[in-house]
Image 1 (spheres, rainbow over the protein chains, first blue to last red):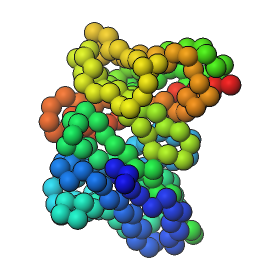
Image 2 (image 1 turned 60 degrees about the vertical axis):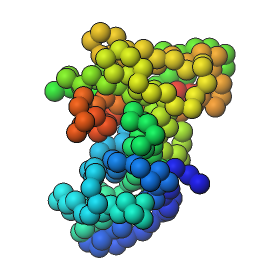
Image 3 (image 1 turned 135 degrees about the horizontal axis):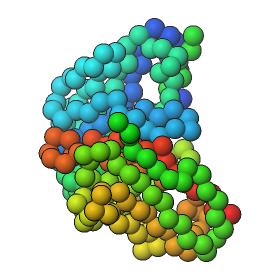
Image 4 (image 1 turned 30 degrees about the vertical axis):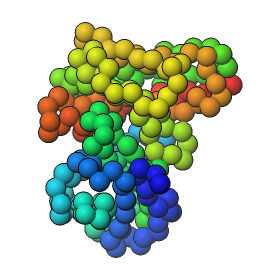
Length: 112
Length: 115
C-alpha cells in the first residue's frame, strides 16, 4: 500500500464546474495535510494545508479532512482553465516530523 | 522578498560524475529540505536540515549527501551519478515552529540529466 494515494487522472471538468480531487493516506497518526499545485515544468506551489477534521475554505478552494477514514480531498469551485495542472496531496506522517510524503498527483484538465 | 533560489537550473552530467546543487532559503526560514521528483511522480523526500543539523533522511543511498551552512543555505551532493538520478531536484524552505514547520515553499528546482 502506498503511503499517499491519488488517482492519477486525467480528470476532465468543464469550466465553471466543481472539481473534486481525492487522496487517501496510510499512516493513521498523520497530523498535517497539504495540497500543492504543479504546472507542467514548474515546481509545486502550496494551495492550502489542513490539520483538523472538517472543512477549510480559501477562496474557490476547500480542503476536507476525515482522519477516521484517512481521507483528504480538495474541491475547486468555479473551475477555470488556469486551474489545469497536477495537484499533489502531501502528508506529514507521525513517524517522521521532518518528512512530507507526496502522492503521485492527479492531473486536472478544465475544458472551456 | 526573494523566494527560494536554486542553482544551477539545468545541468547535464555523465554517469560516474558528481554534482553539487545549491539552495538559498527564504529570508527568516531556518529549515531546508531536498526532494527528488522524477517525471510522472510526486516529490520524494531526500533530506531535511534545520539549524545546520540533519533532521531527517529519506530512503536514498549514501551517494546522496547534504549540508547546511551558517546562513541557512544548503548544498546537495550526489556522487557516482547513475542514469536513474536524472530528475528535478527541489529545495524547499520552511519556518521554524510548530505551526509553520512543515509548510514548504519550493524553489524552481534544478533539472539534472545524466547521460
